[in-house]
Amino acid sequence: MKPDFQARESVIMGNIGIMGGTFDPIHNGHLMLGEQAWKEYQLDEVWFMPSGHPPHKNDRKVTDPGVRLAMTELAVRGKTGFICSDFEVRRNGSTYTSQTLKLLREAYPQHQFFFIIGADSLYEIEKWYEPDQVLSQAVFLAARREYEDAHPSMEKQIAILHNKYNADIRILHCEEMDISSEMLRERIAKGLSVSDYVPPEVFEFINNQGLYQEKDKSMIDDITELRNDLKEKLSPLRYEHTLSVSFICTALAMCYSFNLDQAELAGLLHDCAKHYGNEEIIKKCRKQDILLTDDELKAPVVLHAKYGAWLAEHKYNITDQEVINAIRWHTTGRPDMSLLEKIVFTADFIEPRRERAPDLLHIRSLAFTDLDECVYQILKNTLEYLESKGKFVDSVSNQAYAYYKQVHNEKKGETR
Image (cartoon, rainbow, N blue to C red):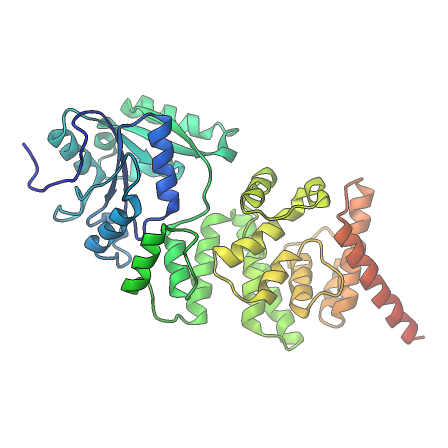
């Protein structure tokens, strides 16, 4: 029995990829994933299918289905093998994937359906409504980013789902695009451009319709959301360290009459890239054309600061260059740091969970009495430790140490 709505598919019989999602808004990452599936699995078409009333989005207001459908049509228009489908938009009530696939199979029995998902969905799919029905009605193509190729966990999860549900799940290889619809909505709400992340037609549509231009939020709301986001991404110990650093940053800001909001924000974001591995960060930096020095490649452990500064600007929409710089230099330091840079650099070293560094009690005391001397002692302590372990020292750290050693010697000379 045919459903009581019309879809806009064209091929008579073939292998059909389904790209489902809220598409609020659709972006280049969605299109890249669809194109890779179309090429890698030689699909006849990929149907981009905006959800009508997604049940898992009840915690926020979702843009009108017709508007999301219009953006999707603009995004796929003129692209070979891509079709915009109103299959879900025209349905009433919540649209569950299990029901959608059942209706698709009834309406188009001549097709073989391939449901395209991200790697994260592979681990969440058992929480979907009727997962047994979902996994039995289509071949699933699970996207794996390049940097994940060495990790066996994805194959293990596929094997678990195959054994439990007889699911046919295949790996879809794709490049990473660090982008999400949520990120785009946040950028637009803050008045930032998203032209690099969506097709030109979609960008123009969003601007003309005034979409996602939300009212201003208070600083406390932004900080709360930021903490929640970091809590999801970082390990529990790293998240505790992050909170601790942010608190020490505000304490030092009080001591030195610096802006508390800037200090707290820089402290919260200083390790925002720390959940990525070193090799992964190198790939991400190269993908974003972030210049890597020979020293950084020899000691990639410091690179989370450089990539973290990029994330702060492009993902978390930080426009305050002082905050971005404080994140950038919190590992190596640099000569003649700004006050905020010194605050974050120091807070990262002295926060209460740090216990092993020698002279820590003295250094903590110096932090609230002589920040330049404190920075000097931290650099001296760090470089001596690295050299004792035979580890490579970044030249910027050596330059920072030389600068603050001179400051130390000049002060010492003045007191004689």
